[in-house]
Image (cartoon, rainbow, N blue to C red; front, side):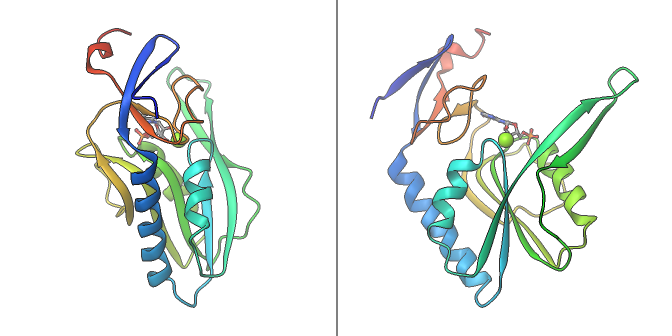
Length: 185
Ligand code: IMP
Ligand code: MG
C-alpha cells in the first residue's frame, strides 16, 4: 500500500486503510441486519461516490433487499445564483418502503438534506442514512444520520469512491490531502 500518492497537482497520504474500512463496513452491515431483521430494505446508493461503499456493504446484508442507484442533477436557473435539483435514474416506487440512503461522505450536509427532502415527498415508511464518512462539526440539519463509518476531521479526502476532479475513486484506501498542500490551490 503506497503511503503517499499524487493526483493532478495535489499530494495525499493514507488516512484510513482498506482493512479498517472493510472491518467497519461489515460492522455497519451487521447493525443494519439487526435493525431490519425480517424486513425488506430498498438501498438508494448515491452516484458517483457511494458505488464502492455500496458494493462492499451489500455483500454483508442478509435481509431481503433491492439496490437502486440515483444521482442528483443540479441546474442553473434563469436568475443569477438560482439553482434547482432533481433526482435522476430513480425507477423504484418509494411509497411505504424501508429506505436506506447510502452516501460516501457528509460534509456540510446540504447534499443529503436536499436528497432526504426529495425522498420524503414519496412517503417512505422508514428513511435512514448510511454514510461512510462524516466530517465532524460540519452538519447542521435535523435529520439524524443513522449509520456512520468514520468521523473525520474537516480535510479533503479521496479514494474508495471519493474523487478529486474525477480522479482517485479507484483506490481501496482513503487518503487525505497533505497539510503542506492545503493553501496551494
Ligand atoms: P455536502 O453537501 O457539503 O455534505 O457535501 C457532500 C458532497 O461533497 C459529497 O457527496 C461529495 O461528493 C463531496 N465532498 C465533500 N467532501 C469531500 C471530500 O473530502 N472529498 C471528496 N468529495 C467530497
Ligand atoms: Mg457524492
